[in-house]
Each structure stands twice: as C-alpha cells, then as structure tokens.
Image (cartoon, rainbow, N blue to C red; front, side, top):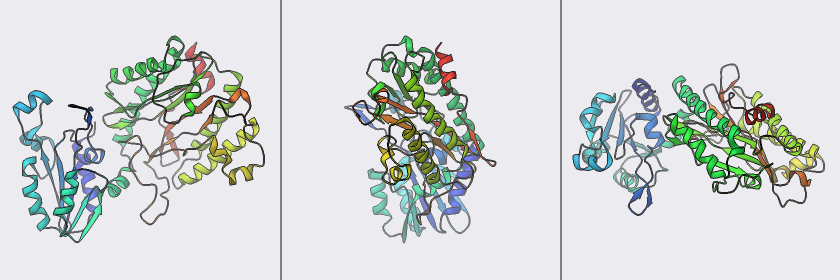
Length: 425
C-alpha cells in the first residue's frame, strides 16, 4: 500500500513545477452511465488518485502556491445517511481530515464559494485540459481573469514516468496475480469450449486474488481472430491445433499489469506455429536486452522492425531486399503497432513520449514500459506461405528500467515453447 507521505511528496513535486501565485484544480472522476439508470463500476481519475489516494467521486483537490510555500485542500462529499443507504458509506469531512495529510478539508458544497476566493489571490491556473465535463467548462469561465492557463495533465504525466519503489511493488503484485491467470490458461485451454470460458477463468483468478478489476478488456483470440489487434468479442470456439492470443492483465490497488501470451489450444505447437513463435520471441528477447537508461523508444522500435522484417524474409512471408522493404514499410502489413508503451496507474500511462519542444524523452531509471513485438498473418493473405495464414502472435512483458539496465517484472510468466507445452501436459 502507498503511504500518505508519498502522496504528500507527489504534491510537493507538482507544486515545485508551478509558478508563484498559482492555483491548481483537479477534479475526481464521475460515475459513467452504462445504460438507463445504471452505471459502470466507479474508478477514480488516475491523476486525482496519484496525488491524493482518495477513491470517492464528487471530490476536488486544490493546491495554492504563493512564492515558495504551498497549501493543499481537499473537498469531499458530505455525509448523507439517505445517499449512503443507496451507494455506501462516505469518508466525510471529519474523517478525511484524519486520513489525508492536507492543510484542510471542506465539504464539496463549499467549492464554488472557495474557488472565487482562490482565484482572487492567484495569477495562474493549472487544470486538466483533457477532462470533458461541465466542471472544467465552469472553471474556464471563472478563471478567465487569470493571466495564464497551464495543462496539468502534461505536468503530472511527466512526474508519473518515474515509479517509486512502492509503485513497482504494486505492479509486481499485479503481475503475480496475472501470472497465475496466464498459467491457468496454458494448463486448461484444452479443457474449455469457448474464448469466453477462458476469459471468465482468467478474470475469476484476478478477483479471487484481490485484483477486483482487469486493467483493460481482456483479449482472448483463437486462430484468425488474433489478427484483429483489439479483438474483444471473445465469443468464438476454441479450435484444436489453433493458437490463442491472450492479452490480459489485472489492476491491483490501481496499478496495472499488461501481459500477452500466445499459446496452442491443444497444448502443442505445430511446426509452422513454432517457426513464427520462435521468431517473435527471439526479437522480443533481443529488444529487452537493449533496454537501459538513455536509450530511445524509437531506437527500440526501429530495431524491432528490422529484426522482424529479417525474420519474415527468412520464412518467405516477405520477399526482396531488406533495406528496400524497410524503406517502403512492407513489414508494417504484418507488424503495424509500436514496440511498447508506458505503464503504471493506467495500462497506457498518460505520460509524454516527447518534451514540449518535441524532443524524444529517453529511457530513465524508474520508468516502466511494455515490450510487445508481434506478427499477424491474415487467413486470406495469399502472398504468404499457406501454413502461416490465420496465425497471429504477440508476446508482451513489462520492463522496469534500472540503474544498471533493466528488470523484466513479468519474467515468471512462461513464454518459451518448452515451458508452455510442459504446463499444458
């Protein structure tokens, strides 16, 4: 669990990035409508949670910076017995003052009154430009008199790039749960009938182990379905001698895992499947070994494209000269996505890849990213050898950049052919 002192430290770092006589306003997430009179399970706005650890809706964080010092204020939903009868107990103003190390706590009903006071004492305002609701619209109107508006999302996103030891430990815990789920899939896929049955088994293991949410909608794609990158129907039959691409990870205490494994339904890879799988795995392992401070993500991307293109030439999926194929992006027909992305509170962490001046941000100790090369051979592609048609393979791990290089946080999840086949037997 993250201690309150870490949230205090995060707010202090944010305040150090603010101009003097500035005001930061950050709103909690709202409940999202699922259908008439029903809502999706509530999840706090990631940036709001990152700075407060507060999990309730109808809340606002305010940070006021004068010259060098700053103060933090939290606005929370007031206690209401009737409302709590329907939606559960609230922390309330009094308890929040004991739990959260801010300068003061108010009920949310006082926010509008206090905002006018805060604006009068400030010259600049920071808020999340990406939030689309009436609270932000009203804030823009109220803050028209201030000399500058700054995008809070970019500043917090940059801060979130570097993970603390506690954050890494939460990601590791999420990965231990995800490991159990993927190993179950490897051991039991041949006993189940449909993709949805496998998905249900995976997500049961998440919840059983205290990860009450998946980090994203699970992909369980058998056969040619794996060639749809964001396939989430998960409603087809599991077919003997086909591969299943499983992209599934849990969220534990707001921290994500993001793992893809591609496994045989029957437990044994066919010769053609082995050839494609071995090629992708070899590329993934070579890219992971390149990771260290100072390396650019675009360098990893270019190297993965070159290696996969080379492998496709060897297998007869592509034909011609390597340099010419790369120049005209011929390989992107079979490898159309990036090598990886930032990961943390969000499965795709809302952190920048470039500075405001457009310069790429290099890898640095404490960053966590995915490495996920793949190859996707559509069933109707007559330009490739028939034995590869209808096969989609992606292998994905979660990598921490360390002082001396990297740590594969998901190394415990089987991915070598021998390991996968032994779990299936």
